[in-house]
Image 1 (cartoon, rainbow, N blue to C red):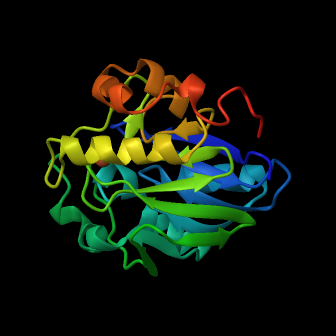
Image 2 (image 1 turned 60 degrees about the horizontal axis):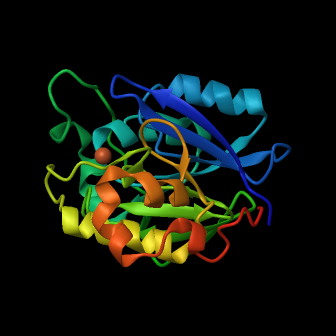
Length: 229
Ligand SMILES: [Fe+2]
């Protein structure tokens, strides 16, 4: 299967990345991942691309990733897929929003996920992977050649672990799981900042120096030499 068409929209004061994802640039159905704020802009973008939003996927329920879930769900009728143990944050969103942000609307998710599921949505085959550490229920959505990984791994950095439920050893294990399971050239679409690849981060991310001792260099992993999409 070819690489999906992934469009990035940096939204809100925390500069969170929401993504509209479809199987290719001609597809008329899409999913939206982490609509964190600016619902109107995201809805207009979907309209501009000529896509119907078939589902809303959430990597984790920090407010900057879910602030626009409710208005996007209402406008599109799309079901929301939410990490199971974080659903209470989405259901009572303003109890968890720091002063100065919002207001945001709560939403009852139509589906909950724990990792290990396979979703077939908008013509996409999506593997749901449990990647806790930044938050306890954090999920990564893996597609052909790409991961939407929220606040697990960034270009040259990693998700913070000082928020409730955060833990560095757990986050490092989650990252290890991704780099062991997926090809090095897998494109990482993170919740903040620009895209990168698993191999680039394994080779050079300063936070992964201990992981590099345990995991072979990306260049030696199967599929590393630009195996194509
Ligand atoms: Fe977060």
